[in-house]
Image (tube, rainbow, N blue to C red; front, side, top):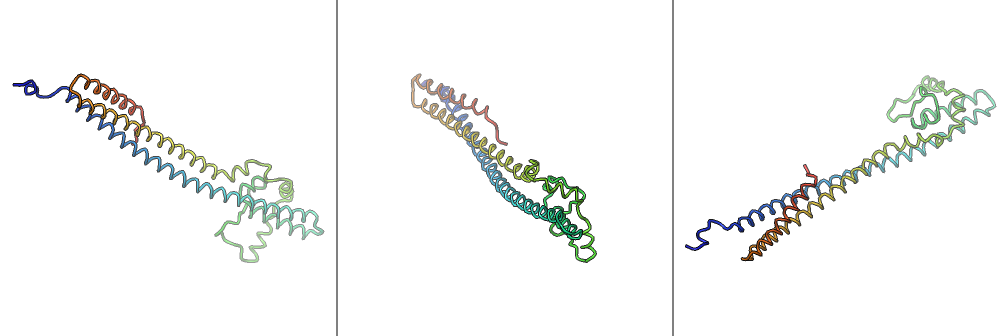
Length: 247
């Protein structure tokens, strides 16, 4: 009976088979993780793009509201000045009523507060709110005029004097931009992690190459190639264990 018939299996071939199997499993796992991290990257980039679009819309609306506030303040100050130099008490009251209308109903809340006006007098013209329709209601609204001292304070106050006004107007847009930047950062991190798993797949493939090449040789040289494959596999497995795992 020959030596080949006496041996139930070849130790080298068994070691190579185990190494080939483990390397194939490692490469498959790395490929799955690469795909999952790629999905996370796309998801984060999509959310970031959507959030950026909303932030741009909020920014444009804030700019529009600021322009509207400045226009209303300019109209109110013109009426206040007309009231100050009015020739009669009726004209003065009418001008102050007009100024009060612009300040209490046409300004944003941030602008109203920036001018230091009485909070209990603020009545913005909200879309869908009940409108005054009867003469009695109109007369009642006209009686609700801001105090003259408050109007004089508003006359000497500029919206840009208070940084909290502009900060408040752009607060939502800034918050959404920060959220978008955070999502972009998460997307970039996911992309980098996916690239590392892709590199790990290459390492496992190299281990497969060396292990398979060892089967060609019938001398001790085959153990050299097996050792190269084993070292490459251990390095690839160790490197993969340092990477975050996608859930």
